Image (cartoon, rainbow, N blue to C red; front, top):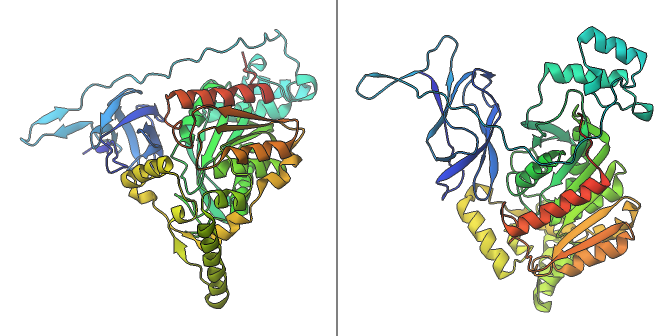
Length: 465
């Protein structure tokens, strides 16, 4: 019997999901565990993987369809197997006729610069292109003065052999830990073309499936390649659970930069980082430490961990918290173990943030984690603002809401003040820490428009004709 691929149920209240992308077409072979579709719910975006190896024989719904959970969305057949089902009464029923897969709507973009009829190319590049039937007029040169070099042709050959996938599940290593990621690539890449790459950094205890995939798709529409991943110890990445060390997460971000810069679709000289909340602080730190980052965006970032966590507590609560950390430090020396607590005992949320986080926790209990108090101590010692000045002369955009009660606006102001003249702060009226994150909302559109405008100025996309 053909294997059914069903709409998964990721959250307790999830009733349906939207098929954003089919990553495979009808008739293509698939391997067990290979992503075949991207599905979006109200709060997360994730991939549906093939439950078995075989041929993707039927796609039951076009892209953009909203499908109830557990409903069949595709069929996979084994070699030589026919696409039929046996109904409960024993009658043979043919699976419904295939539905054409729709491409996502084209994005209106400024026209690309006109190309000359005879592109400049090095002799070795011309010879290799002729041998492999590569049209040089379709390539973007990376040599002196924009000349096409042999490496440009080699990338075009590799791209033709392996067509670009709009979404791939990927893995790479940081300090020996395998990190799990999702790589989003624009559909309109020409063979051999390379685009600016952006590493997306999630916030405090968040996973790669929340918020960032929606931003990644906006970046794709604007022409950028985007990578989102789980830090070590979180989600589907390897590493010690319950451990959140800011500088280790920065090391993961730098490993992600290395991985992304090695993709054939990415120009390693045009890389950016974007982070949310604690991930925004990591974006600042990563840009300050790593010159490969040519532009950085920080959304609602804390600039000084001690000041941030202190701002969330009354004086007696802060004193009690520090005493708790001191006792845990003593116990770590004596026993080698740190106490584990709810992350919201470290970062105390305001009522609006608490309501949002409670809703997420109730719907996705699998995302619940505990953190060591050693992690809290590391957060207190973390001060990205101290090195923000190292980012200049590269541009930094900090976006913050004037209604954010979880990370006060003063945190963003301190970062920008330390970063200097090439840093810019955009304050959005009425924006709190979470009220903008739902895709399609006015806040989400405002934030992502600002990000794209900034990147287009700092790292403009030049499309091949």
